[in-house]
Length: 522
Image (tube, rainbow, N blue to C red; front, side, top):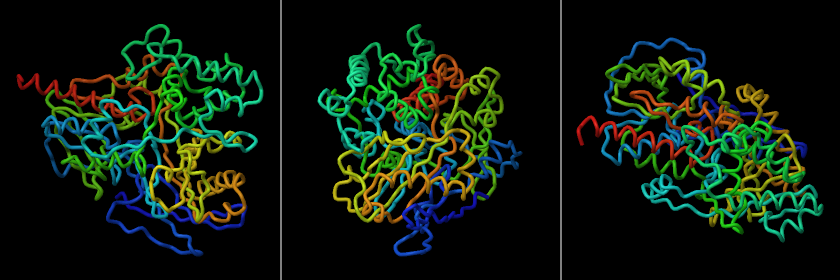
């Protein structure tokens, strides 16, 4: 059960160089004590990333396969289901308050989308890369792990003519970068509107009911909101941002999430910062996981039964046996598209709400080279020359002092119709090759020839999409608590950000703690 194998595929780029790349999957590459296989094709090409099988999750959660009878029973006061940052936060809050709890995660390592891989001696994030607000919950995680974040440089933009502009939203940068006065004026008006939003800025976590104004922003697409500014460059930037950070084109995401997310993108000239860790947000996830006393990975939660007396949680172990956990409460911090199969009785209202919540597949492509192919000045660079391909390029090396490796990551949002491609090794390898070709076309010949290898990482349901009308009913109903279950995760807000994940995890845990204290009379 849950066996592993490495998919190795040759990618031939237009330059004629040969690259070896693995098929990415929906989870971590290997456990810490495993040695990656090394297959040498041509010096110095070596594969580094493998993928776990997702067959077991598909069998029990997608296809509804019957479970074997449990062979072992374990009792805890609280079980946390899901080891992404939301589940990790919930588990840390519970442990800090002395609650007997355990965290269960189906993958072989914790972190969810906050995972990284060692590539060319460097730790490279494969999913989540930064956060913008040092919230109470994030500060709690930082304190628990003693890992201090670093402030990232402002974003850069590659314009159609190839020029690279940083701090784009300042008056001086806009004047030099956007020659068309009408186009530039539209960008300024958009900037000025969102820069001063305070009480009017849409906020998270979502309230139970949105105000009439917030309902309008939820129902309106991001593209429709942007139309009023009549700026082609703004439309291109927002569409790329929506695809990369919100999982879908701006025609399919809502203005509510766009305004909340994008204000911080204006950068340091407007008092907005963003943070990460050397090696990515996986440093935080790994630190929290290490601080937890009771965690179990490679443990797929396949069924959750809520009774009048307890919660029964059936877990498929790596060897195929089933362990039943009995608890007074559970935090469910896995993506909610699983709930129709996971919960014994999800309820008709929840099921209807789940139909209105969308998840998008996503790919990241890591490119290793012998010389620098990024400027080293920007953590995130938006390439406005390309369409319907990668949106931005992360340079994780720029916040790793003393790093000698050269690795960049292409962030490639996918359409839901491309989800099956991630399960087809040849199709995914071909897709990655074409994507890297597009990127390499903008490099110098020396840079193109310096590329050593390419690694691919795919997320089948990687990001919840804040679609129009998702915030006023569907998100709240899909996440409504039951007598013994509390729900967490970014999809509790239908907004894919670390801040949402950690806030929802902490809220779920604190609510359970209050229930336990009430029962004990404290």
